[in-house]
Length: 178
Image (cartoon, rainbow, N blue to C red):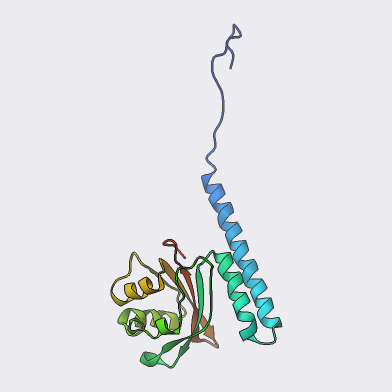
């Protein structure tokens, strides 16, 4: 701004906080990326000669879209207290610190009361979220062995019954999955 004498007096401007808008744009882009990966994965699975052949690629597409370190497709074998997890397929990023295998799923932590409570929630079709920061006892030991900072378990229902779950791991940082 200039005064009556033509001398500089100061600036006039407006500022807008666009933080919320940028966060919303980022969330929408993430959602779109994940939905596109799920769609491409579904097309691959349906068009494949066998699910076993297509599953690794499908998990990779979804894992990368989620910016996850590891995905595990786990079948729930048995019923009730005798339900045991069986690893069918897995994917992990190049930067994942360790591989989760069938041996980890057979560890004593799987039979802990905390994991049994997870299984009950999954059986009801509920998501389960765990983080290293909030875990204790056998669950903390399991997360430490997997070197996961946070895990999301998504139940897979088949004809109204719990069939198994998709485990999504972040080994780099705690994460608010839902």
